[in-house]
Length: 279
Image (cartoon, rainbow, N blue to C red; front, side, top):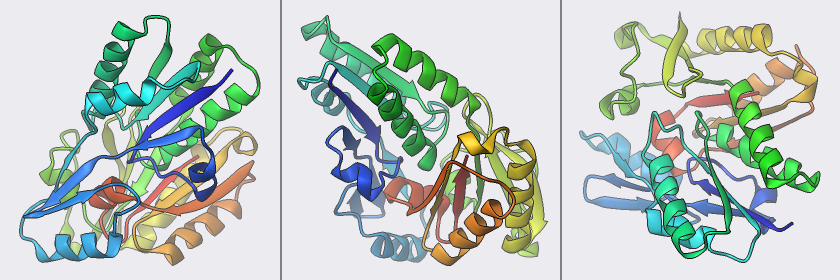
């Protein structure tokens, strides 16, 4: 059966995925003061980060329209899937669901499913890869949905950021209980909750100690790593990302591993120097 996977642009597509005709990115948009950015192939991370650093205001973002998702679902493919940012963090999931409803009004027999990633960034990437794996294995639409939902339930996202200001100012840290002592260079180690919101796992004095704490937790809680893919995204800090990758691979064996640059929305929230890990 033919299929299409629409991934909102918080999910970074690898170069290989960009060449695979099954995947389509649904771009979010960002605004920094009077400057507008589209999270697609035109996105310039260096320019974006420079404008964010120069602005006293918090950048804003907007999710893809329901009409974009509707059009994406209306192709000739037998099965259509969307993978969106956690519904706890963005309106992208609701927008995709509305786009699905609009499509089904005209094509009632179309098979469409919208996955709430309960994650972001490379968490979405891995979910899209899992859909492809299931489709290539010849599973039915129902089987793909079941397997991928089970995979989402097993997934955890970890991250360590230089600053949490973008997340805080945009109201994404409502469940954060521990104070962030920026003046003392305290760096929180953050992780996703099963519902897809954000919680604090711990903290450390300085970014490197926080990364070590994150690596320790990943190794401790990851079951059957040999069956999983290690994915890391970074915002303008490839050397730091490679250090984390090497530290993890030195302590556990995984099926595969890759590192990507954050795209626009992930760059907005990870901020310069941020690291995101999903296994």
